[in-house]
Length: 511
Image 1 (cartoon, helix red, strand yellow):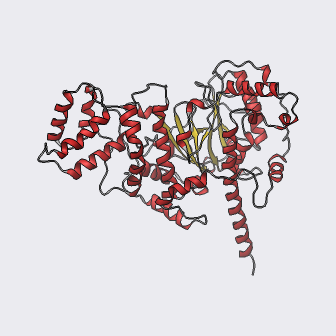
Image 2 (cartoon, one colour; image 1 turned 120 degrees about the horizontal axis):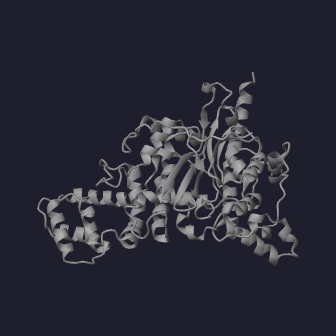
Image 3 (cartoon, helix red, strand yellow; image 1 turned 45 degrees about the vertical axis):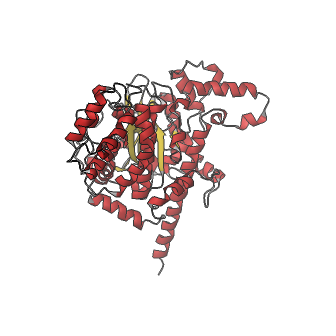
């Protein structure tokens, strides 16, 4: 029987090291990347090539020694693998606008949720291993009860329980040293988290002091550009600086994105190394009351220099044009506080007071224009350039919820869950082309049920329709297929490494 747990464990948060100082843990990660049997991390100049590679996955599910049928058989050849749930036709459920009603949610889990692909993603192998069976799953039920430390022997067992519970969402936790359901009967020292994907969380909430187009829980395509730029910067850093290859970006369902770094090296990081990675990537620090949130030593770290090159392409359009943060006279002081020369600041303020509706782009250009006119004898051109670089970073560099990344036992919402507020599906984002992702186009759960109805109504006499999975009849199809390709690549590498290890162990036994 499931155990209801009302409290979430409290975690003592430790201070992380400076992002400008490479900790020993980061050095160890870099050394691991160099020594790994997988190809070395690509160089900075190969970023475009890397993205092209990520975008051209093979569509079929063929592993080196496993056919699709063999993988299917391995994933289902367990006792009780056949679902016993009576599934009504989609037309039996009435869609309720964008809302994720319990009836619509149940239909979604029965017909559309990619349970098998999720199992393979978490398990890294066709048949169940401890990577799945000792994995914690936590459910938020329709009455907001929180059910922790759940685990399942097979994907089908998980599917049946999800359909039975019909949660509003569920979260994925770490793989433990023992089955999470047995945590109360095993020695405390014997129950500990062993591995979990390295995760990152970017939420629009952290940009509220900057964005001017929306507020609260609202988003639009203008402010979504913050998330797009963040994905570009972090994805390249994770791949080039740490050598990670399997990075899955997922839309949060409303106004953010999550990154799941699934490489084996990433999954096995302990808390100290996770803190080191998060600290390395975190540049913007401080709350709304902090005047200057970016304080970097010079010369800049190569990661920061590379990030600036990416940010410059979007700073004009995203900040100066779309957000226009300094147009209003009362907001000018915030920009001036980030500039280093008092005499220049006085001249800029005097000029801007005479123009009541000058755009941010124009004011940004005025900084260099007045500086070149020699309005300040004490002006240091190098110092001004560095200050402007810090402004670009403060306004556009990814704002991480770093605590999410620092701890092995942190739980994070599963891909393909439904956001209860918007009804939208938490779908994957193609990190090779994040600018093509539009959160407004992500299907809602009720929309998907309607699409199945519409498809079946127009293909009643078609034999091919009966062979299609329900997701293939809907706008969820490209997202599920992208996830399948991601999982396929991850499993290929895991099984290849396992095969090589088995061969090495076999050779070591020979005399």
